[in-house]
Length: 445
Image 1 (cartoon, rainbow, N blue to C red):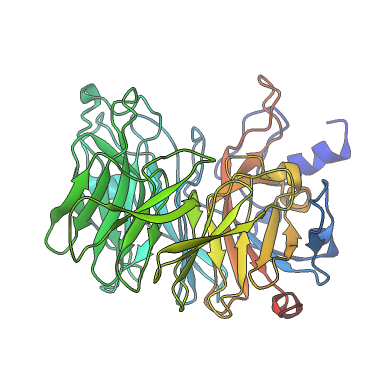
Image 2: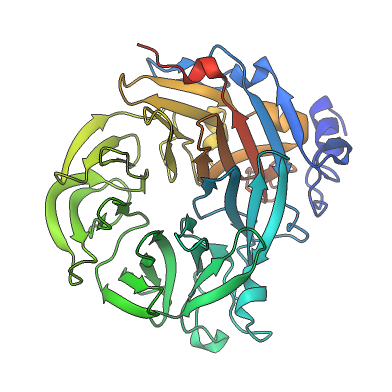
């Protein structure tokens, strides 16, 4: 070791040395379960910001934790399904991305005790014989049903994992009881030979909606699935499904998505109405849709694709272009969250697939009334300096019910750049909880 930064990497995060094999499971310095840091360093930019973007004045407190299921190397350990905050807890999932026999894990974080608890893992629930296909991801949003169960679905690790020779016939819709971790299969292969990368539950009607990816990686079709979890039957399916995101209107139970999938595409929405099951019908509104918030009390949903934000009115089925969104150079956003209390602020991290650190891994607050963009915290490089972990991107975040905390599940890096490729690659998952100072949640004109 020749530099101070290398010494930090050696001591922090359970590493051996830069470029050497990582130690599993990852551990924080001094073996603590959670590290809590309040520092002005969270407010220091490490890359240029867009014109008009400001930085918070009050320093946040940040809690940092590792997931203890990471006891062996993943390919890589990563997060792909959006999280959920409810009742003082944050629910999230990570997976090992292994294929054809992978595994994914569901966790609950208790904000009062600052502790993570493993609820279940997919392999233990689906009970597939050794040597047969098991999914390495949970790629859908976690949703809490009115029956008290958490619902989600599985997805493959590598794209070539889903072949008949591996025993693949389709994915699983699962549900887990958050208090005791009891988990069970709701449906296996509701659509034959289809993976389920996109999905969420209608909590009242208990209909699980999904967009698929064909088990044959050469086939690019995306199907749509509406599955009645009470009746255990397919309510509707067709060959034109959503690309990675849907708009769910809780007030009506309707689901909206675009048939013209792909990043950067602004396209008409179609509507599926569970009261009149049948082929989705086109509506006049056009939006970009890579991620969407929940519905507000007055029927608004906010969607994002790249550096652009839209407002969709579920009552009039019209859309409004709200313009630019991001704070730095990264534009890929896969989770965007509404403050449930004021419904005035949106929170997000750009660079979901691993580029966040290039902007300093900023958590951005967007004011829906003024259009102001403010960085609440730069999670990089201070997180790396304190723990050895570089937060690189996220597909999972949520805001606490009182609006005081933002939970972010990261795929990130320990050990520095891959010596073979010379690039920083994610290999480890961690959770950060950003406590937003009251002054930074106040309305500003």
